[in-house]
Image (cartoon, rainbow, N blue to C red):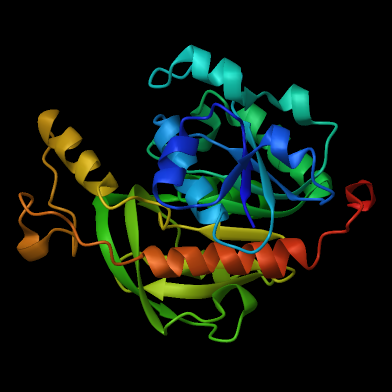
Length: 305
């Protein structure tokens, strides 16, 4: 089944070029189907690129998915055209009286700041509190995962000595959990961040389960026991060249940055990176939508609590 997007969203052209089945809102309105309602809170500066990445993954199921894009009003985006935000994004006030099957909170390049010093922290807290009764399952990604663990469970983050950047092997620690159904016991996932959460802090919380772990990157996938909160510390949504763009951006800034681990062939930035995480990324989102959104959310969203 297709993913439903705005008629003029730039991602539409990209997804169609990849043979991904999309339909516009006007076409979807004529069909007698209740699609899954997914809210994407996009905190990344490159919003058009990020929304395309997540829409690609959300499209890879037999379910019809309707995505609403959400932005912060307490933060001014410097890297996305204002008209794009006006055309395609909603504010929290516009959607706070609605209910959604699922929600994704993306990462953000603010991990060196204390949570309370992020300019939109108060607004984000309101949204996370609202999600407890208005969204069935929320997936938190990278900094969004750290923010979610801090808000819901008071788990702190810690700054690392150097940036964690690369594609790392991960081992499953819970091999029969529904969200990792079909996963290989060892799989790759990109990471790009300056902070980490200690597994020891996560293990103290009875409600949390660590599903996958990396020797280099630490805990990589965590869920609450009921599956209504999912925390992903990596960026399985990344494109082939996303880490490359970040690396050369930092190099051009004159930063003392290491070449991303296990990314460029022979660690040579002149070579095209290999895309080694796409299959598990698609499987992860398929499992999340199927097991923790579609099968458990009430058909009548007004009954969601």
